[in-house]
Length: 188
Image (cartoon, rainbow, N blue to C red):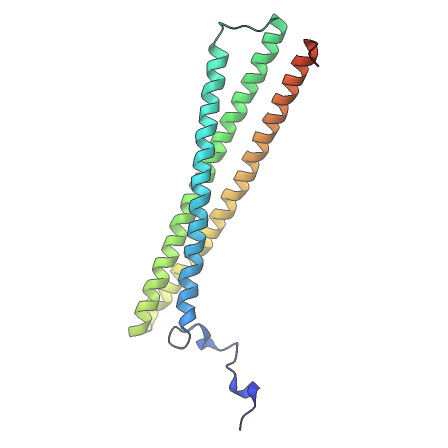
């Protein structure tokens, strides 16, 4: 009788990822990109929302800069407030450009994950009937598409971190401006 170590399949076996000997191989090749596709979709939807909010904020700032019907109490304060709004408009424009790059990255990621799932599925089906260079090509396509998708997801996330830091900086500057205005008016 053989020992347990001899009976257990070897972890380094090339057949471990073979769909004939391991049904989880196909499942893992399809599920992982599918889950990442879902994550990329959620990120794209939230980024679209952020872009819409940035565009709305830019429109509001432009309207405030063009509106002269309600001037501030003093010309000096009006000048400071206009300069702050103009700076915030520039920062909002930068945010919108970054958010467009984020969306582009997330869309590339979505396409890459979809291609990885499709080529994995096709490779699994074709490998049931025959092996050869077609299955190998599909494996390379799946891995390459997955790698591009992950890289695009990382790139988009990095841009999103940059955009968030701009938004927080603008919020900080705006709060400082409001505090300064209140102090000058003697309300603080």
